[in-house]
Image (cartoon, rainbow, N blue to C red; front, top):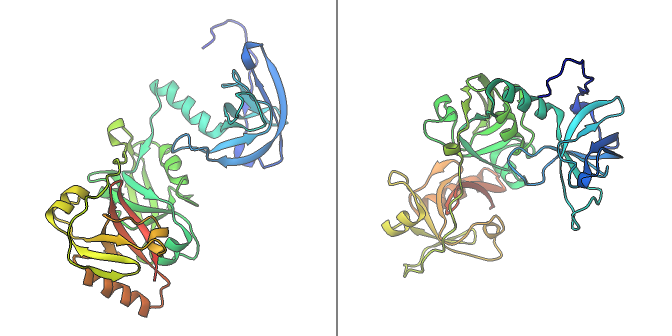
Length: 335
């Protein structure tokens, strides 16, 4: 904070949501410590994900941004700050016309929290989610891929207490549309802690409205992926061949190695045909089928019965919940 008796001029934030690809922008910074520098370009993309974290939603620009520009403003032609320059992608370390700015609306949220609390505080829902592919959308009864698929509920978390279920598809959160999976972490993170919000989900083809009290994200709440482990080879009796998979009964050792709770049933995948739909969906030997079409299974015959039922219903693919070394996840397997 600058303390002075003089009235200092200041810039204003603009509405970055009104910015469009192709709009002219101005980047100001201190590249390589040379002093104040200005460059001009256009917006190349909005809501850009560069895999730097769960909240990626950058403005991409071809205005020259180099080392030392971080923290500098990105202006629109009305002189309003619509972003704060923060990163580049470059094979040389210098600008090649691919720079990124944090949107002004996100910046203002962070500034407000720093002023009030001296730190950033992010909302927490308590779910593990995954992207909805074309095949998953079909198996879930969605007209197109949209929303975020809940693959796991954290016990005692806000979602659990609100009655959210594994297999729910989150469509809106606090009145904001969840167009794709990566929208949800940012929307939740920006929601005030302890705020009660309306969440619309699709559950087994029907719309369900929930009321969720947003929690606070702590370091201990972060869901970390387990390191993959290679299943040990065991002598098994011939299993049931279905959909390019060899399905087998679970034994105690396999259950323990996979981290499957004692109160959960499942069916072990012994082998996966390389040219099968299951293989294309990332299913591997040693994975465990926990549910088929949102119904629990305990033996290979359960899986076959549910697949046959789905075929009779005219489904082209079926939703399968897998226990993997990385945790629970849904896959869609063509039938």
